[in-house]
Length: 180
Image (cartoon, rainbow, N blue to C red; front, side, top):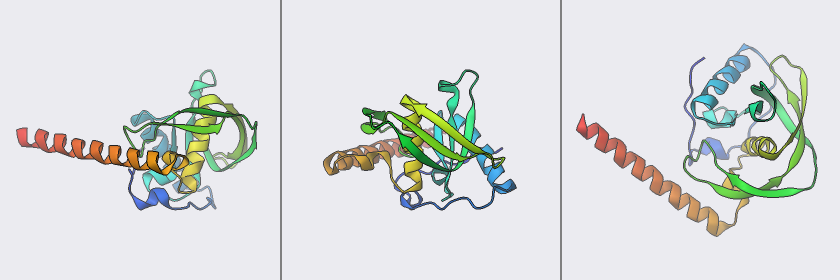
C-alpha cells in the first residue's frame, strides 16, 4: 500500500472533529493498510486517520511494545470504556508536530473498545505507553492535539518553537536545492 503524507500543524483538518466510520468496506481496509505503512515509515507507534487528511474515527496502534510478536492493530470507532483513575505525567510527541515534545497528563491504564477491519469487536486493556498512545490518537478524533492539554503560555511557546523548526527546515531544503 502507498505511504501517505502525514498532515502537519497548522492544517485545519487536525482541529476538525471526525465522524464515525459507517461501513467497513474495501476503501477503509485499504486506508488502514496504507496508514500502517505510513506509521512505520514515520517511525510512529500510532496514527489517526485525520493525520493523513481523513476525518474518520480510525486509528492504527502498534501493540508490539506490549505483546510478544505484536503488530499494528486497526481500531475503528474506538472509545475508552474504563480508566483506572491514576494519572501520570510523561513526554509526548506527535507525527503531525514533528520535533516538538512536552509532558502531558494522561490516564495510566485504560480499557478501549472498537472494531477491527473484519468488523469484529475488539477490547484492549492497555497501560503505560500504549494507553497514552491510544488516548493521544483518540484526541485527534476530537480535533485535540497533545499540546492542547497544556497551559496557554506553554502552548504558545511550543507553537513558536515549531514555527522556528519549520522555518529552519525550509531554509535547509532551499540550501540543498541550491547546491544541485
